[in-house]
Image 1 (tube, rainbow, N blue to C red):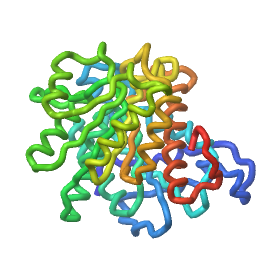
Image 2 (image 1 turned 90 degrees about the vertical axis):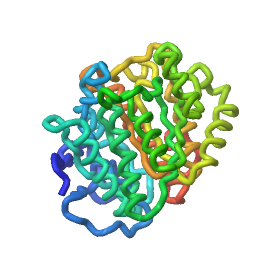
Image 3 (image 1 turned 90 degrees about the horizontal axis):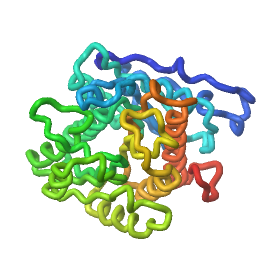
Image 4 (image 1 turned 135 degrees about the vertical axis):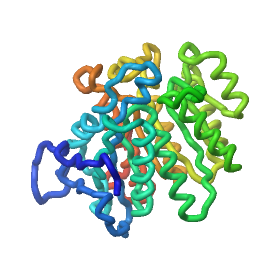
Length: 342
């Protein structure tokens, strides 16, 4: 049984143009609850997504960032509620609830999230995790690790992280939202697994020299924010393709502070010269089209500092793009022409 685990279906409310014409449906009309404690039967349809929230900000607090990320999952859901159903009716959306972390340690919360993600994978569903601080990623990753262990497989997961920071800090005095990719590296080293980490959008002014040296020591290739623009797609995608070629599966995580504060004011650490979402979205879609991606999360949205829900709305648009791109590559999109969002 998952502890500190609750339903979040009350957040799915919105406009209704019709109750029987699917072409008018929005996500709040299509999504269904999924209680992971009920031992549901595996999904046998063509394509299904399970959304789960990780209501944590302890990692941000330990990392001396601006707290407020624990409220993000509900705010993102509210922005997703009115998204249109631009996919075939065979595509199913499930809300798997929230993991609450206020009265437990960060490590306990990550363990619960890991078990929840493992259950979602066992149900043949694609996990979409709503952080929470970026400590969300360690729990999410451990869910994939647990799933591979139970299947008797060695996990070879290439992690692509859109982030202004490396998040590879030492954790001898405790882990945080800034240490998980160092933790994952150590797990891979201990188990003899292929460590794959590609951070994109790294800001020189936001990382110490020590972190750059750590990345070099661990063989981590990275893409600086200054090298990411519409005109540099060819070189950026070449690095992405080279990275993904060396891994069986891929995992996408987004720290919302990778974006300029003009697009994402509500984050734990704002970036005045961060990235434009129009640069990031095509790269995300390119990665998804490899058919290697097995999980996605978006982290570090802090409603406490948001303006008119701008950052939560951006998070919803990114998730919309992820879902619709996966639908398209599976020939399950209602609108099939190339477009910005899907």
